Length: 363
Image (tube, rainbow, N blue to C red; front, side):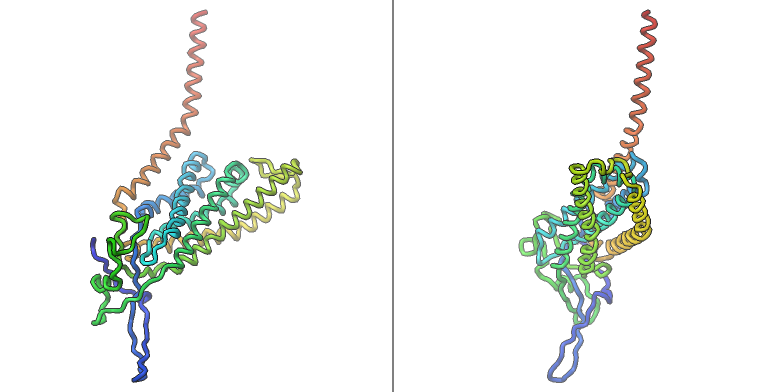
């Protein structure tokens, strides 16, 4: 493995003052924060992230194109679900002596999905009618619950992570790899080093790196806790809506909103709801989409830092561009099936004409 080397930034250096009681002088000892970590897995590499961002943007911007919406929506919901399950596993198999940097990847995917999906469903009539008032309500409810559990797990896992203090060398020079390795002699590959059930074989080799400073682990804990609020509110709203509709179907069938329709019995109530939705949308939509863009930029800046990008899989690897190629093939298949019904109708018309012609010849 190539040695880890990076210039020491001022944000990762602290000043540790020891008071000399004899001479009554303060002696400053500069220290740097390091962690023993496993690198980011290939499933959160640059290719996988670009694919996810593209799918989310397509679901939001091309939501009225049915064939494209269904194809992208499946993948856009699947990736955060896997990341949420991964986050739960990371919290369940916590290792005290090492950090799994996959918490950054799981947080990036889960937070963007948790903020985008409820807002898009609430704001878009296409998603709100087809998915929230249809059979997709239960799927959205379970999906947001899974993301909520994943974000809470990331919050707990980030809080439990602690960095170590490591002093400069005797000459006061920036720490190189040899001096960095001496900070934690237990951060080694093998039976004497840290071990995780989800890191086996070559992926179980940890490295000592400087603690990430562009998006610190403590900041991830705060952002994960904040990102869990929208899915929690969506859960409460969905549960309330389900109970309300069930009560109306049982005791007041005439007041139930029609599936696939956005009209209700009272025009006054409908006008109030539409007015509230319009004014809230003008405030909430720019606010939440701004937060999503900020999280995306902060996350990408952190992913390209020397600490987090160390030993990650490059975009040229098959594990990165294979997902993009596979999704492109799925979209091509969707285009084919979109045209298939028209071809079937044309074939049926041709067969019908042939039958009629043969009947006339026989007559």
